[in-house]
Amino acid sequence: MNRSLTGRACRPPSPSTLLRSFSFCTGIENSSPVIRGPDGGPCRIDQMMASGHDRRWREDFHLVHELGLRCLRYGPPYYRTHIGPGRYDWSFADDTFAELSRLDIAPIADLCHFGVPDWLGNFQNPDFPYYFAEYAEAFARRYPWVWMYTPVNEMLVTAEYSALHGIWNEGLASGTAFVTALSNVVEANIRASEAISRHCSPWFIQSEATRYYHPYDPDAAERADCLNAHRFLSLDLNYARMPAACMVDYLFEHGMTPSKLEYFMRRAIWPSCIMGTDYYESSESIVLPDGRTSGSNVLGYYGLTRQYHDRYRLPIMLTETNQVQCLNAVFWLERQWANVLRLRQEGYPIIGFTWYSLTDQMDWDIDLREQRGHVTENGLFDMQRRIRRAGVEYGRIVRDWNEVLSGGVWFDHTPGHHCSS
Image 1 (spheres, rainbow, N blue to C red):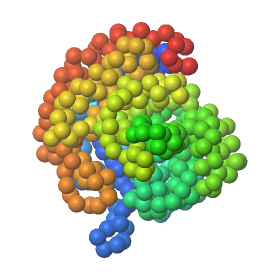
Image 2: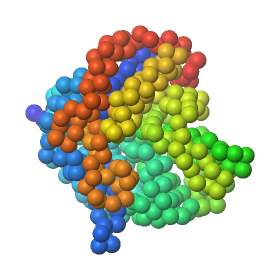
Image 3: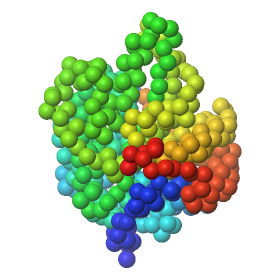
Image 4: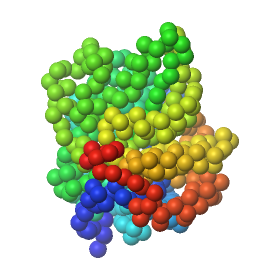
């Protein structure tokens, strides 16, 4: 009998056990936004197809297993699975989740990664939160053994790239379109979390981009302050924390109603949440007086994560990081791992580390703006499934540290000191 359909009961660890545990993880890149194609029409970008995972998934899962990893950010392609209201094609998900269960790899179910089915249109659609919650509930019923979820990946990035920067999906570039998309995306994440919780007691790992903006000079300080408030918008709404006053004004100015803001402030999914932090070289920027930004790397993952934890007081997982080979991916990996270890030594409840993704990616050097077919060499394995130097080093880190950290050593956590739960 297909274990992915019958499964074992959803029995997540208790909060105390979770805080003492540690998981090394990777992911299968499953972005699927719509962009404007060469002919001006819509063009779907499917990263699972681009990497060959849709054909080589068994091989990919075995590579995960052979590296010693027992946790994987993974989800079926949403646009090909949710084929209509109340209608689903589970064929690919049934096969892949059955194999994950057989290999004893715990998935963090990544249900919506930058794109929606054609029949839903885009993130301006006010019906998206309701239909997405329907999909999430159907998924939880079908795979009852899954206990970790990222309902909507990187909510802020999703709304920005779709409706503020004009790159993906609706391709809009206005404050009103952005606030509409952000509201719909966060509401979808909340409603999906509530729907999943009706069937088990899961943990929600909300993967989100972490950022910080440094002012170049006093003339740039006000702009930097605004950007540093903006970076928290999606998590503030998701975790029922009132945004900064300037951001509340911004939300109201661009179409959010007081009743909608009150809806977000009345939600209570955060007790079952882990704050997933995504950190890249572009996570820190210097803000120039004219509003332009340039790269910077001052605080590092250690400094940014302390800021985010001080704001939300939730368990933490580094849910994405990577670097391309030509920029010394091994050094980047070792540096981020040192940051995670330092946080854990100091008692911060950081419970996992993720190199994202398993294989190289396609066209991420241009943020999926176009479909060029250019390989971004940032995986643990290349497109031919040959291990990269970063993969060798990650395997070494997993072997050296897995047993020590999963046993709760190097974690002098005092309940109530760093984590309010």
